[in-house]
Length: 282
Image (cartoon, rainbow, N blue to C red):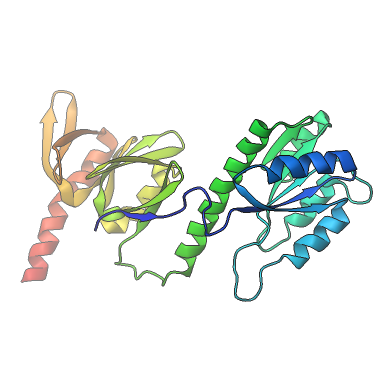
């Protein structure tokens, strides 16, 4: 099964970003509205003079029954406002079913840590400039694209246990769905894992231990602290003075080391697999 590409470039949907600017000072709100409205990633800018008005705008723009995505993609807010502060607004937004991304544009440097603790995506110091705002909007686009892919996958019919699994991989604005069947081996890289497939390699933020657990029933086996292999692709088990290694087929030949602690299980699985196949045929 070949890799499938999901179009999530730039907009992530048929429309650009819809953003809400919130500031109790007219000059600050006008500047925020100008910076956002002049950015090509943004198609609509809503404004509010305080957090209470912002919440009214968000409720007005909430998705209808036929929609599952938020209408407002992001809120750009000041921190210090009368009534509800920007931080208090952030805490209210976390209760939304589909909370918009939150970016603070403020002159209060001391609130940066608290901002990220309440889930802010970015924290921009005033006076903001177009380049800094564009950087935040790029991050929001990526988040919107990822959310769209997640909703699409959740809406898809549930897979039977023996059906193909796919892994979303981000590639510069496009999410590629890599089928598990194309993975020859997986290499640990810190908190990430690199999937080595028949047509290249892909870095995903999934620990190797998690893939080991998820894919054990699909024929993948841990052979080393750094490697997980597709057992059906093992064509040779080699022994040398330095220990065992396996040779993988299914593409360019690749030899990978086997650690001593995994050798016994590997041998057992290699012997058991053909025996089970023979018993099923007879």
